Image 1 (cartoon, rainbow, N blue to C red):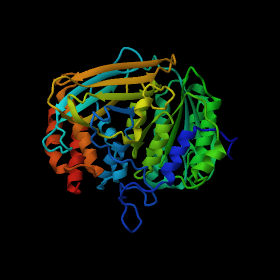
Image 2 (cartoon, rainbow, N blue to C red):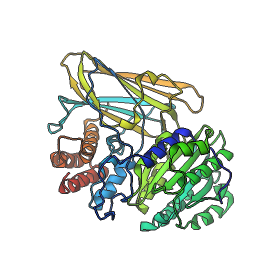
Image 3 (cartoon, one colour):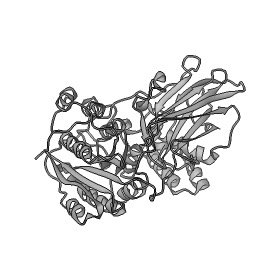
Length: 489
């Protein structure tokens, strides 16, 4: 049975329902028989909210480019899974910024909360066609890594999809194993609660400290898939439970694990918002974890973006280990809230610029200094990478200034940093790292159908990049580009 009705951020549910009920934004990998091919989305997937690709902008007309930071990587992880299964990912689930943000660029860290800003420029590859653009502006942000001994204790409320669709590919078994692994990484003073949902929702475990015995492990072992999918009920109860246990001295987080298919409960967003109403307590972040070969990425990403968190994905035990053991436990906490970037281009030196990706994270230029505008949350040790294709005028001088603004979660005060790049090529970011970023983003542009080049055009460069860096992640990127080329991308 469900507990008392909870409240949930209106923006979160509005975005979620828009993603659920909106029209499809791209082609599906499922065939006309209605059966999903391996690595494709389910045939019932309605598509993510569609955002037109950014176009080149004349800085004489609009010199400022403003967007919320985003550390999501689910798009790249899902594309990797699809390609390894022999299928191209659906174009509307490909986001260039998430491809670029899936690699380590070795940015230097700031001394305190907030960001270190790194800027570099490089020539675009000859095969890269983007209007008259000839150069790439690479902007990197980095937060400070916090040792586990320094992090605050955490309250983690897991909201777990146990509907019938979670039986496919033993998704529920992968979730059980991954949760056991994650709890094993936590401290005895950390606390965990569990809410499950299918046709209805159930509080399986109240907030319980990890050191209090076997209750958590027993609750995880009890997870079984059954019934329909009432995500609304699960999120309501999960947020209520998190709010009841809220502790300002802890990191308070809701972690949603699901394939993202919601088919029970209110389906019209106006009706859902009227039913729920109000807002949840500040300070609770949301991590959405996509699970399985096929899932509703658009819904889970919009939930994360509007729930002050981020989205990740896994489809296997190995992927779960990377997400939960290597990423989550090392980045618990938030070091910058409502973080926004504003890049201001000089029309004397830049004829036009185009931001590659971040279409669904745009912020109005005039809202950059408005600290009430919701933006991105970034945890300790996270980096953010943004890329611009630019056309220089040939004049000497500063190309652009980069400003970052955020709220310090410890003090509530606004933090900011600003730096400038000139027409000279700098050395802040190693050239080989710039090459990785543009290759990853270019790959995404091909997969989403917005490039005037193909995977065959960039394959030689990405294979050479893998050899130069010796990075296994870049070697895997080369493998994926080769697969996509064979599939006709």
